[in-house]
Length: 261
Image: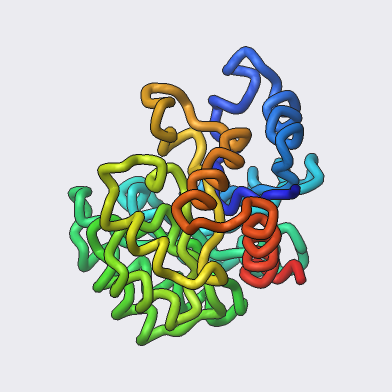
């Protein structure tokens, strides 16, 4: 059984030598449980050169390039020009499979109007380079949907989806998959669990968001891509589907999303 972690910050220091374990050993732990690919989202300018270099070192590593709303305040004045240049260079790299992580977050101090300008700029780039988008949406689903309708893209995923069935359906109608991670392992996330269970399996992809979003029972610990089979098990139970068949369908989904099929 093979699994793909569609959203994992594997370039973070917690997965490097600073953790006391070499990055290669962290990856070996993940592959030992069936994780054969992961996608590292780009969140700030410093990664636009480092991610291609990192992913070239490991079979199964892929990446996106983008500016996350949390890093807007630290961005340089010419970040959009620099991102466009990075995307132009990455167009020749098969490991660059997405534009993102981009989006909106109503829980940060950066004004939403400023966040929306950055989002629109990057949606236009996704259109230009025909890349799917990796979306961060925290309390902003309806606004994100508005801009996706105005600037349609070549598919994508709203990562760590948490919301209603109506919102889930609206994303899927636009070709945006739902990233399913640790949230569904918490019984209190009843609205999201109901929404995920009611969606077509074809709309879903797995993720850990490691080192963030620890699963229920692992609170306070850094999340890890080796936990991805536990997300699969939780989804299997939630949807009452056989794990092997579910895993096979989820692989088809992520292959379609990132152009691997």
